Structure formats: C-alpha cells, structure tokens
Image (cartoon, rainbow, N blue to C red; front, side, top):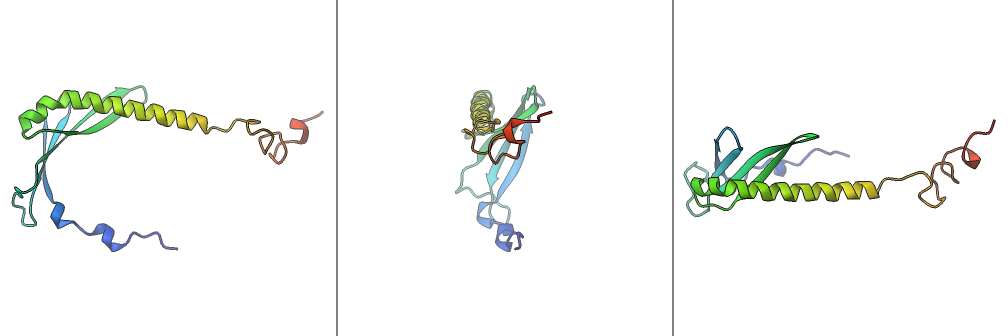
Length: 135
C-alpha cells in the first residue's frame, strides 16, 4: 500500500496567496502581516489584511511557542492588541495542556486496574500464575 501523498496536496492555491511581512520589537515577539495578493503579486484589495502575533513563554519543559490572530486593521492596532491576545493564547494553551494531561492520566493502565481481565499477574496477563515467583 502506498502512503505517498497525491499530487493535489502539492497544488499551490493561487486564489489564497499572501505576502508575509514580519515585524518585531526584539523583546515581546513578532507580528506577521499577511497581505493578500493576486497571482501576479499585486495587492488584492478585495480581501482583508490579516495580522498574526507570535511569542514564546519559558516553562519548566522549555520554550512554549504561542501564535494568535490579532483583530486589527493596521500595524499600530496590531501592536496595541498584542499583549492582551498573547495573554488569552497562553490561558487557552494552558487549559488545553491541562485537559490533555487529564486525558493521558485517565488512560494509564495500572496493573490489576482492569478487574482481573488481563492485568499483570491476573488471568491472561502474561505474568506468573498466582501473581509472582514462589521459591
């Protein structure tokens, strides 16, 4: 069975082209301005310019990257919205990480947890009969 992606996956969507510009304050993060363009590279004024904020927060596990939309109609407005949207993105990310951690903890199988239906040392569990070694 072939797992090669089909050629359509690599087709460039000429109707969704944007020019990307990156602005940074060299401290808090970056703002990407995504300006829609046509297939010739000219500004497409029929579509809105989008702003995306990016930053990272240091955690015990290392840097946590954050990326978030900025509802703004100018670079100045995007700069003003940056801090609040970064805070919201961090809160949402932390809640998602907590949810994932709860799901992972609830799916951990502990020996004997399955009520004798194949846990270690139980029937069919691959352990020694009777739950261990006898000398």
